[in-house]
Length: 202
Image (cartoon, rainbow, N blue to C red; front, top):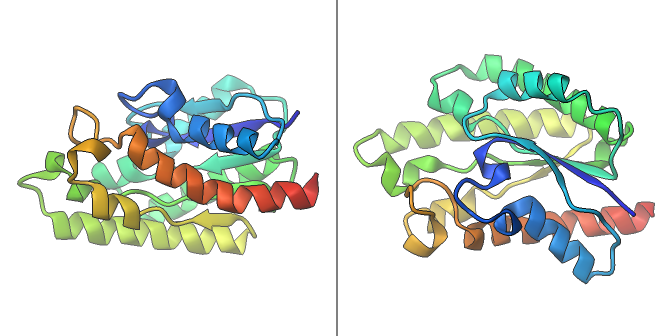
């Protein structure tokens, strides 16, 4: 029986969607359809968390076990609060190293998910959408480079919310966070990377 740890913020826990519709749960459902025996995801994520807040929570959880694979999606709240990319790079690198340890030292079993661009959503009305997009791109570029340097996987999902982020059925009631329909896209992209990795390993 495989196990899965999902680390992140609102995009991982699935703000305002049923637990079964967040992307970790949809991912597990896709894996089970491929006859992969896997337990329910362990999610360490809360809406509003920044990199340092996720790191603090990981310490508080005292997680002793290791996992078949780990996903990491973090940084949007760093950007939202106006923190600089250099700070993000340092704290993201620490989180990635921790994720590799959780994956029993197998860097190929760590899957970093890119940060969505919340600037396209109705919630961002009146804000500088171009500036938000530039900052999200800078964060994602940093995460991608650090992920590859550590031989981890990087899954780019940002294009999908940029296309669908102003469509009512791809958003929940707050007009900011994705609906299960958007998370399904992310789960499919993750599954396409994770299934070959698991089949090769197990």
